[in-house]
Length: 311
Image (cartoon, rainbow, N blue to C red):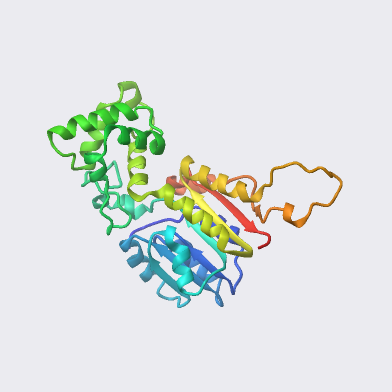
C-alpha cells in the first residue's frame, strides 16, 4: 500500500465537530486517512466517501475494511449531491474536502503528475475520461495554452512556454513529462532557472487543473455542500494553492457575512438579517512547524471551516 500522510488531519477532524450518530461525507477519500478518523468517531453514524481515482478506491477499501458504516462511491465530487439524494440523503452533519493530490498519485510515475519523473503526459485523476495532459499539450491553441498557464499556473512566462510548445509539436508530438520539462526550461531565462523551486511546477499545476476541471468541480461542490448541511453541520476544506483557497474563502464569506445598511442601529436585527452560516475560524489554519518538517507537502495547506446556524 502506498504511503500517504493526511495533511492537517487532527485539525480537520476537530473542525468537523463530529457527533457519534451523525451523517458525514468525505468528498476526497484518497487513501482513507481522514475517513478512518471520522469512522472512529461515528459508531452510530454513517460516512459517505467519494473519489474518482480507481487506485485510491482500491487502497482505501482495503484500509477501511474493518468499518461497516461507510459507503464508498466512485464519482467526481461535483456529483456528490445527486448521488446522495439517490440514496435518500438530503441533509448531512459534516462535509470534508482535502483538495491536495495524494502522494501516491505524485509518486506513481506512470500517472504523469510529476515533473521529477519521466512518463507519458497524463494527469487524469479519473482514468475513464478521455481528456489528458497529452491531448491538451498537443492540440490546444497557443491562446488557450497561454490562458491556462497564466490563470491556473500564474506563470509569468506563460506565453513563451505556449509558443515553444506549439513550435515543438509541429516537429513531433510531445509525448512525455520529461519532454515538457525540457521545453519549459528552454522557455525561461537562466536567472529564472536559478531560483528556488522547480521551473515546471506552475505549468504542471495548470495542466492538472485543466485536465481534471478542478476549479469548476470545486465551485459546484462548495455550493452543494453548504446547501446540504443540517443546522450545526460544518464544511471543512483543506486547500493547497491560492486559486482553490480564494474560491473557498469567497464562497464562505458570501454566506457568512451580510453587507448592507441598517437604519435602526439600536434595534435588534431581525432573524432574516442574520447570516445562515458563520465562520468557525476567522483566521485560516495552517500546518505546524513540526508537521511541515515531517511532511513538506503540508507547507502550503490552508484549512477553512464554516457552520450552518439555521435552515
